[in-house]
Amino acid sequence: MATATIQYEKITPPREGTKIGAEEGKLIVPDDPIIPFIQGDGIGPDIWAAAQNVFEGAIERAYGDRRKIVWFKVYAGREALELYGDDTVLPDDTLNAIRDFYVAIKGPLTTPVGAFDYVCLACALEQDGPNGQRPSKCAKCGSEFVTPRFRSLNVGLRQILDLYACVRPVRWIRGVPSPVKRPEKLDVIIFRENTEDVYAGVEFEEGSDEARRFIDLVRECTQRDLRPDSGIGIKPISISGTKRLVRKAIRYALDRGRSSVTLVHKGNIMKFTEGAFRDWGYELAKEEFRDEVVTEAELWEDHDGEMPEGKLLIKDRIADSMFQQVLLRPDEYDILATPNLNGDYLSDACAAQVGGLGMAPGSNMGDYIGLFEATHGTAPKYTGQDKVNPGSLILSGVLMLEYLGWQEAADLIVQAMERTIDQKRVTYDLERQMEGATTVKTSEFAQAIVENMG
Ligand code: NAP
Image (cartoon, rainbow, N blue to C red):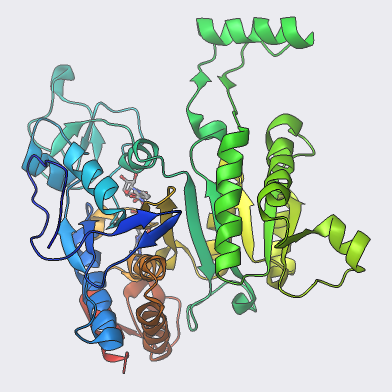
């Protein structure tokens, strides 16, 4: 039985299933965990239905009746607007459910990016209303789900729930078309800091009073003149923010028997932010994991370059060199820990190397909470067509199953997906890059994966 302690406004946790617990840095996972899910906007419902079919198929195949997930539908984006009204796109119910149940999974959500006042949550068109008024219907698709622009729901979820690590594994799924000759050589997990750096959102527009005051302050503190027509952005990187991210990366590496953690930074130019990230990362590794790690300097000074058995190597690379390394010597890298902006660029570059974002899984992690998500957007032009690739959400579910400790089910999915791609039964996006492939629908791709689990 669920033992919900939180009062929800418009949703009710399932009566069956058990809450995941958390103790001393670890999750306590029952055999019937309740897991909240957000379907997402646009193609969300299509890829969610497909992914759910795959998750349930794998769990049943791996554990029979012994284990199952009890899904708990929670709302964000268009569906939230429909249920809660009042322009509510990220209800407290949803945040509370994720806090309460620790592990959740989501499809993509519409994010306004332009300077328009309103956005349609059905087709993602950003628009202004007639005479500054709210449009009664979307100018493109006619939907009523037009809402005033709002901050990114993804960023909102990360910030409100303090999901400070964006974790993206990047490895090649056999058969996926790739632009490089040996895509299988790249197998990294990127731990990107998620809350600070230039993403802290402190910016002042060129010509504003604040920008002028900052320019004056910089002159006063450094005797340097910035151009008076500059916009200003702030890049905070803290000891606490860095250490909790690096701690998570090292713990993950040790738990999974991985070989190295590389701190990726631009410390040669930005000493007190990126350089400090590197220094605090090494400091944390020595303070908290002294007996389990060897730094690259120690490797050469104390061990003649021979890695001692059972230890984790901690090294660092300058960000621009890291982009070369993942192409030229990918198999020398394993876990990468990066500040926010480096991680943003590096995640997409690595994903491209193994075949693109369409198949890249992602997760946002706090101390206990894990929110797993497709990394692509809502692809609104394909809404309801049962056409797009559900691979990113399915592989995010694989991460989720691994986080639960259900490795057998996770492995079944990856093997079955590889088999399906080997059979060239793929969605349109992969078909157009493969010779002799057959295009299947979203739901058919998922069903083929389930059938291939035998
Ligand atoms: P997008 O939704 O990622 O789609 C861009 C293109 O990528 C699609 O037209 C399609 O290319 C391809 N694509 C995306 N997902 C695919 C899938 N599952 N299978 C096959 N192809 C796929 O990017 P967007 O059009 O720039 O953004 C639409 C909305 O999503 C915006 O509101 C944006 O802010 C939001 N967004 C949300 C998230 C998130 O929730 N995490 C992330 C990014 C964007 P082809 O047309 O060439 O087939």
